[in-house]
Amino acid sequence: MEWEVPALVLSAAPYGESSAIIHLLTEEYGLVHGLARGGTARASRALWQPGNLIRAAWRARLPDQLGNLSGELVHGPAARLMTAPLAMAMLASTCAVADGSLPEREPHPRIFHLLTRFFSLIGLDPDLAGWSGMAALLRWEACLLSDLGYGMDLSACALGGGREDLAWVSPRTGRAVGDAAAGAWRPRLLRLPPLFLDESDPGTHRDWCDGLRLTGHFLARDAFGQRHRPLPPARLRLADMVAELPDTA
Image 1: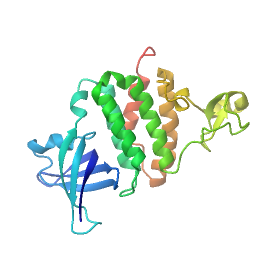
Image 2: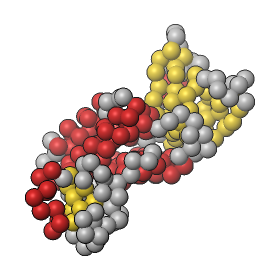
Image 3: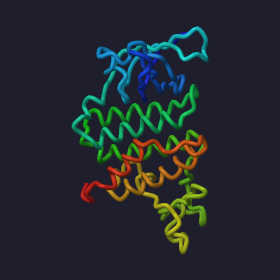
Image 4: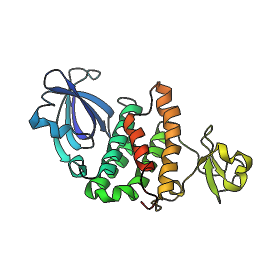
């Protein structure tokens, strides 16, 4: 069994003296694990950095085996983010969320393409990470929840059916609620930032904080909670970092 396809590196863990266990996300095969021999050696270490887009080759005798991995670098955004802490935190968070929530060997092509586009965005101009990059990250998390079957229903107000003033989301059902219809329930609801309804909206600092709280609630309860896992530390660090940004960001 063997294949060779574009893949995103999500994580790399040392194994043995010089090898590494690599987790990749591919369009055709979904989340795939493999053994990269010599993966922690100086000559190969840069290839297996999380966020890298590579041309991966996977080989094994049987399809359910771990398999041996080799690869060739196509695009490496991580090296350009060393002086951009927020962009690096965003890359680490998305890799950890995808790695921890996606089922192994189940294709999710939309998640793969959106994540590839996101890494290209922050890699080409790290300074954008705090603007359109943050909005793109939040929309990607919402798409991930949808692909996993835990998507929010933002099509209309759960209480009135309209779309005019959607401003809240029920933490229990994931359905949107209009501001006028929220009434006394407003303190118990999660704020819905406008950037989830308008893809041209980059959002504000408040929107980013509320957006991370919104998607984080459903990631923690459903995508990770159903698998008895906590939210990845990288995702928690990103939320803390964004919360500490000045309001003029």
